[in-house]
Length: 380
Image (cartoon, rainbow, N blue to C red; front, side):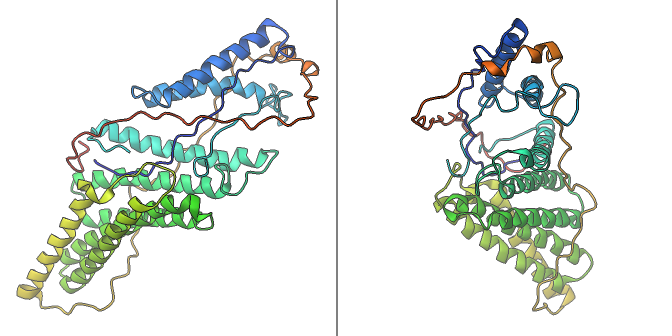
């Protein structure tokens, strides 16, 4: 199953030592700081570790965030914040302002599907439960801004449904179901694109171009399989018109592929129109349209409507919703005595009259993965 996912660069972060000299006044506090330092380093290493799997990532993130909870929430599970809530600032690069095709097994496809739903749930949870608590509102166009988070949620849903569509095609499910799934996926892409429409084009143009071309691509898919459904119902004239519309949207997607490759912006550049998954749809539309035209000329003799059929399709299966997400419970190492060992009155005061220079965060060096042979839409 070869898919061409647009990926913004991995977020990089400035080092955090968790050294609170004078504040961490006892062994328990020092151990918390040491464990935080090592668990954060381990989590960041996994971002670029090609051997990392979802279980390893979850274990590492749970280990880190369970320790970090003591800096965020009160230990008595009240709504109060921890006294350490503002002791540490974190700095990350911004993905907009600051893909690798391969053959995968059925189990790997399921992992991709679940990971995308999990990612959608994490973005949704952050947007609804944590971003509103920031003491400084996110700047426009930054990663923590509501529009970007919503775009990430919807894009994750759309890309998870792409896995569903590929599976449905592979198993030769009913054309009506495939058409409905493709239509819903096109709507997701359009929604994400609309969410980004008010952002500065210099930062969002490439991302939006990707979403627009995928909207056209899956609309072509929807019309193509809807045409097959119409033909099976002896509505050959309407089927031809549906396939003509599929041909039109496929041509739009093909033109947008070229524009996407020429558009400057964050994220690696791929060539969607060169992927077999993309080319196969073009051949499918062409062959299905020719079949409908032949059968209409020999059997049906139906008039071809001037207006394209309205796609009012609703999938009963395969629709993706974000998986609910919660941070792990606070680590058992956090006790009232541990918290008491942090003495905030001993924090060093910054009496320097000169502002500190802006810290530069180095970008993440992402692994250079060589794509395997592109053999199409196989998942099993």
